[in-house]
Image (tube, rainbow, N blue to C red; front, side, top):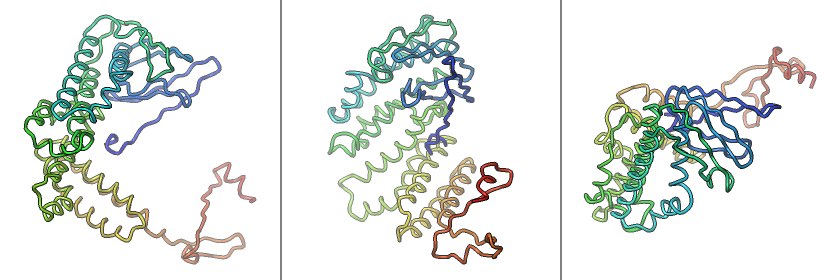
Length: 370
């Protein structure tokens, strides 16, 4: 849910007088982290595993990482250096514009296979995965990363998280091609020759829930399949209007085909959450109330399909909280400094500034004379 709603946890500490720092991160499964020193990135998008204990030494242009978990994070640096810098990164970014559909699907499938082969070599090796690699993307030019093999195996949970990240990165790209790629190919997902590349990747995979790429895949597959069907030239205007008005119901019908159990619940939650998010764009609009009722009806209708009703309760709470934001403040009474009793409703039509304080609050007490 955090990945769907884009909720992040931030940990902050300070470097002491001797140049040391320590951060303890509470996780129960592999998680991807980004580390900053002030406004500068030390590294981004690296998995850590419960039980890791990493000792990081860095200065202006060099970083050393040792300790429990160093082999796993070292393998990720190796991946970033080989696939996400220089010419490989440029080729990847331009593949949407330059390649025809089948060539594009082949490119991403081969790229995924190459990435997985690199990880298999690193994770199954007793040697350190990376030494003196240039980090042109994540540190200043000519920076180096050194790791020293601690002879500790990479946990299976970590391997699974990294592998799933690579697999569903490719899957998302193959799904997104019709709308990010070349014009005139928007209905390519209806082509069996193209779809076979996507079909080689597991759709319903609870072991992939650890990675944000799979959570995003749960959104992209129903959306792009609906959008591609909606774009077919054979449809008349009435069918197009129907497809547009019922896009969330139709996306749910796709999700029901490809996902089961918890993965379906998350796919459905994404569909409904996007409806709720869209309400924020309508704040102040005369159509807000109509759209609110439409979305509330969609939640009540589609939400009945949740296997775990916790998801339904959460999305309903978000709708309720959203509505409360635009509701009138409850009326209350208070006394002015000269003892006059007033009510909030006495000031309808005016901006009212309210300062809440307590005698147990030092700064509050300091403000009282003013």
